[in-house]
Image (cartoon, rainbow, N blue to C red):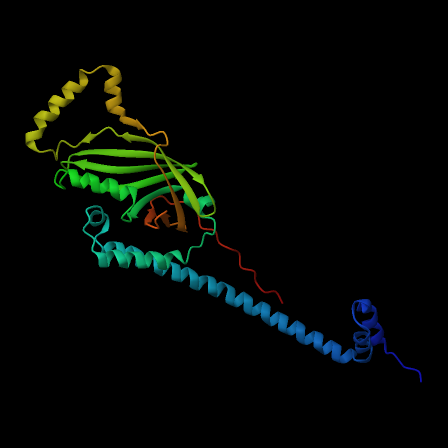
Amino acid sequence: MATSISSQSLLLLHTAPISSYPSSAAVFFLENPVRNGAIRKRKLSRKCRAMVQETVQGPSATYARQMETLSAKESLLLAFKDAGGFEALVTGKTTSVQQIDVNERIVSLERLNPTPRPTTSPFLEGNWNFEWFGSGSPGLLAARILFERFPPALANLSNLDVVIKDGYANISASLKFLNSIESRFIVSTRLSVEGPLRMKEEYVEGMFGSPKVNEETMPEQLRGALVQATNTLQQLPAPIRDAVANGFKIPLGGTFSRMFMISFLDEEILIIRDTAGVPEVLTRLDPGPLPLVEPITEYES
């Protein structure tokens, strides 16, 4: 008995690569053209719905993560303030409860790190201010030594910042003596990339900057000594006088080094941890590069 094949079946037979299907599938195409078309339509409909859902949910998920990160950063900065800020940290006045509270919020922010390879990210370069040191941090150790030898009325550390540029870091500490003599101690270090998160820091040079005197705030009993010191400085040989004016440099020659990893980095906050896991938190001082925004693909019907 002859079998009649409609033009629609012939079209399906022509367009579908029968060789890629088993024989039973070929018979299905020949005998069920209407049902096959319905299946294709259902699959296409499900695919379009999936594309629309992905387009809608994608930006929403990104926005939710951005809001979560913003909330975590604000919470961390608030914890710094509640702990007494920079002065309380370097003088050792933060309590154990305040320290664990800050550490808890650091961990909460670290899990939201948006930068998978921070050691080579453009966000790393710039001017950063130290907000928090751990107990084993070199910055905190230097500050503690200063405050152990000089009472707060005699000397204090007003701020600590770092400039990262072209594989080098200049760590600068602002010192003030007798509330009238300001000086800066700068440590230059060389940075090398050891992995996507890990870096090595080698100390290259230290320098004491030339002191700047504010005569208006200087105690009356010390003004005579200041005039005498100024006159003595003018009588020194030119090379020594220039060295005093430009600051004293201490070559370190890579004698000291340390390893650290970057656990969080974006356009505003940098968190690093040393080999003991001690965290340091820095906030950006300069505008820095613009954050990278991933394009959102819109659904086209």
